[in-house]
Length: 350
Image (spheres, rainbow, N blue to C red):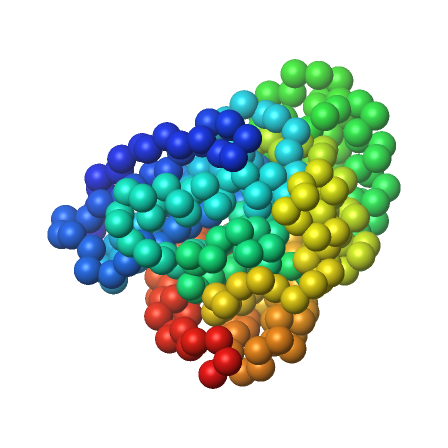
């Protein structure tokens, strides 16, 4: 059976600081009978990361379930020119304006969100600051408010990031196939020397940049050959500014704001979260980019304010992005995501 083609509509919108962003509205063969759900990608990728060449991707799955599916392309997308950004910018400028645009276009009063990696961390800045009160349910994959990374990755981000920042303003997985500078060539050579797990140069560079492991972000056996080849075009740049903020946050044990937005407290744990949304925390048990402990700690911290309301699901046999890209994810993972999206919200105080 060939992969279906759904109709996509590209809708530009402006972030709070004027940055040009867009939404991708995905239409199925029949009108949706459920409300809108907003999908937010991580960094060094783009919205297309949710559309791996598998028989049923997460977008297909949600459309089939009757959802009105929207993909947000925020400033971390590799479809936009490289700019320095912090996670705060996504939380204050990008995601709240994307939420409002979807509600404006659909006429809905509320929506749900499925957020991944740095799409999740940046979203949680805005969520906990009360900037997206229209969001009733959030399903967060991999990491949210309390990033925990492997010891070797922590060493890399604390030692290698300051050194790299002396020579480059970004890292780029595409350096594996085209290295325009001496710095890029040096990193590409280092990856060739240390990574021998497959013949996909971008796959190996992405693992080097985004975690520890061979590979770091998925199990190869979870990916079809088509997906493994496809991902070579789906990873590119992310700025050193992001790595600096993540280093601070990892060292603190929770997200630290960079102090440039008056709407944000110094950290996500500085005050009680200003949201009534129900959160479903999900993590692959074998994630080597952000350890599952990230979501365990986030769930524990949030649950102190409203016990027995939020949920935590650790998915065996999966890592970071094979949660969405895996050839069997439609069977193993997507029903969990659906269950979390459809778990009923309760009024605050119940």
